[in-house]
Image (cartoon, rainbow, N blue to C red; front, side, top):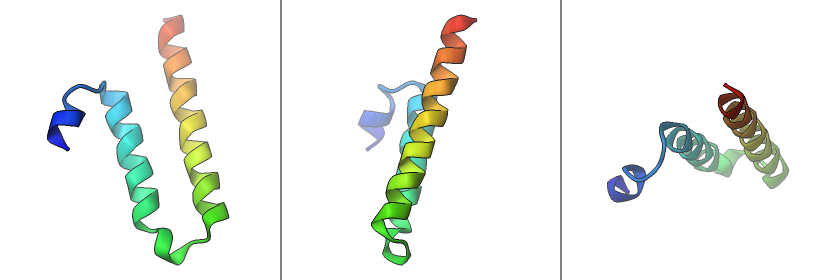
Length: 55
């Protein structure tokens, strides 16, 4: 895992960690809730990336 992380940007690592955290708690949540959470994380990540490109 460390080999993968060192090739990613800091934002990509944070995004991956958030997805893994959501999946870790998936045993107590429905698939719809997990999908919603991952989509929200992706939207926030993409907003951050587009904001960085603008500046």
